[in-house]
Each structure stands twice: as C-alpha cells, then as structure tokens.
Amino acid sequence: MHHHYGASRLWRFCACLALGLHGLSANANSLESVPGWNDVPNFTNKDFEGDYDARDWKELATQLPPAPKQENLTPVYVSASTDNKFFVDLPSVSVGSDGVVRYSLVTISAKGVRNVSYEGMRCATKEVRLYAFGHSDGSWAKAKANQWQRIYEKTANRQHAELYQAYFCPDAAIVSGRAEALSLLRKGGRPPTETY
Image (tube, one colour):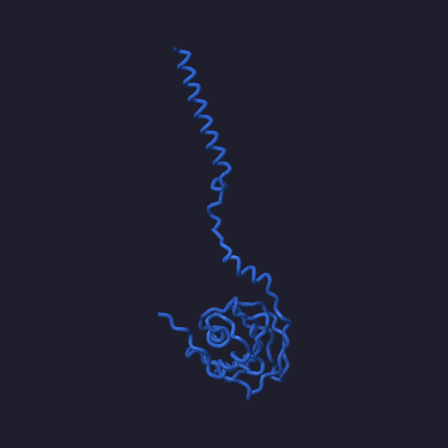
C-alpha cells in the first residue's frame, strides 16, 4: 500500500514536470518571449508601398530653362501674411515623366528685391527641390542645398504649399500635364476641395 502511494506521487511529479517542461519549451519557441518583440509595429504591405516607390524612382536629368521674361510671369497669390509677391514663369513649366513639375519662381520682396529660382515639385512625396538661382544677367548658379525638402503648411515659405495645393498637385495628385498646370496658373489656381 505504501509502495502504491509512492508510485502515485512519483507519477504526479513526473506528469507535472513534463507539463512544465512542455510549457517552458513552448514559451521559448514563442515570439512573445523574444525581448522587444511586442515593440515591433505590425506592418502591412501598404506601409511599404511608399518606400518601394521611393527606391524604384529615378529623377530625370534637369535642364535649366532660359531666364524668365517679365511678360511671361503670372502672379501666384500666397497669403495676406506675406509682403512678398510671387510669380511663375510660364514657359519654364514642365511636367516630367518622373512625376516632377519643374518651374521658375520669381519672388519680389516688399523692398523690391528680385530673386529667381528654378525648382522641382514632387507631388507623390509632397517635396520640393531647388535646382538653381538666377542671376540678373540671365545666367544660373547651381544651388548648393539642393536636396528634396518636405513641403509644410507654414507662414515662412508658404509659396510651396500654395503651389502644391492649388496649382501643381491639386488633391495631392500631379496635374495631368503642362496644359493643366498652365491653365491653373492662368486662372489663379484651384480652390481646395471642401469637406463637410
């Protein structure tokens, strides 16, 4: 009888040990036991679409246009909060197969100082790039800081946000071509889509 009790205790001990080891090995093989696993966000294919496009995207070689002429400038209204006046040189506007709208921008300060820049805008990523500055003699100087920069809705340099929203990337999509870009520039842009 005593022997039977001992065997029963031994069996229960072995069963508990086996269950414990099984649970331990199952837990060790579980990803939840890896430190920091739960900190990794759950990515979907959609999260990688932008990066994939960015990796595959190649920018076309940029050719600088002729210097802007006064008669070809069309005004771009930016905001009542700036004293600067902005103009786009219509002949310089192009829509590339790389998804970049390129244009010459003329900025005239309240004191009458005139600045000319040749820029590119990429609607897909809401970025702008400065290619060159124009000199008064009509020549161009390559911009040193010419990386793609994110366009933000802010008071300083708000001209890029306005060009993005109303002229070159309405509803965050690139214009269908040069004709649409020129049409929007001539009629003063497209008002943002109202949402209720």
